[in-house]
Image 1 (cartoon, rainbow, N blue to C red):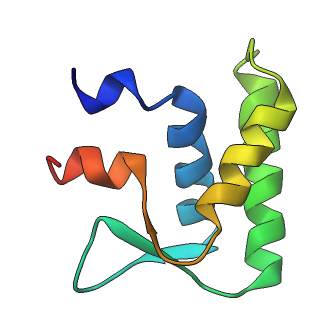
Image 2 (image 1 turned 135 degrees about the horizontal axis):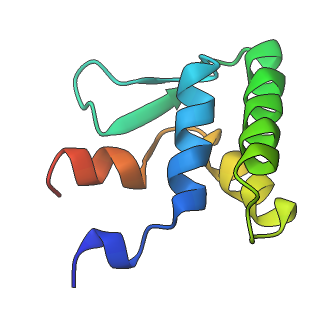
Length: 89
């Protein structure tokens, strides 16, 4: 069973929103680890981006699941699902 079976599109979207908003960045030593930038403005921007993506994609998932995934992504150092998949872990 691959990682695709565990990772949802919501988690991918949350990570992309956080990275695009510069609310998190990749660890230079361990690229599959993201670290919070500590920028509250960037975090708000990530929430806005994810909300926009949710509305534009006509998502079947409830918005609260999207926001929960983003909150998890914005947490202090953790390995993100998308990063782990890209690193082949």
